[in-house]
Length: 131
Image (cartoon, rainbow, N blue to C red; front, side, top):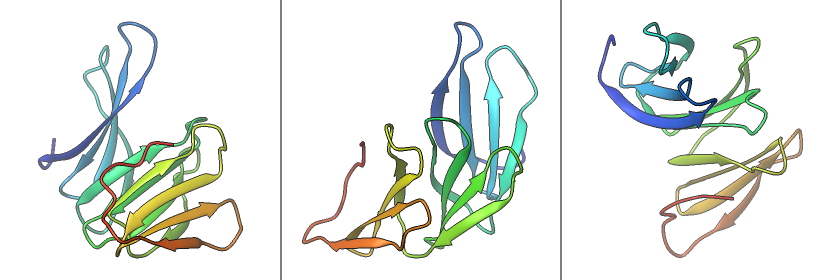
């Protein structure tokens, strides 16, 4: 690896071919499989990776960087789809493909497809998002 691993996400797979997503301190996101010694580069952000998540269909990748920017990439074309500032963590909805939830700045934000961002102010910080 070119820099230290900052975030690891298990993405599963068939037995013996399970995969991981790695977010590096350099901002690079890699996909590795247990049966392959060579990592597959996916995207590179402007700063270190703080959090990342893959949508249920594996077509969208959300990456939160050290600057608090949540960037969503198309995993087929590797193109940036959109970005939202003020994020600490992010998670895709497991039932609704285009619904992303992220937290930061004492709020919980939900982005659904092309609809405007919905934010809910919170009195306490978000520890973990799983929906």
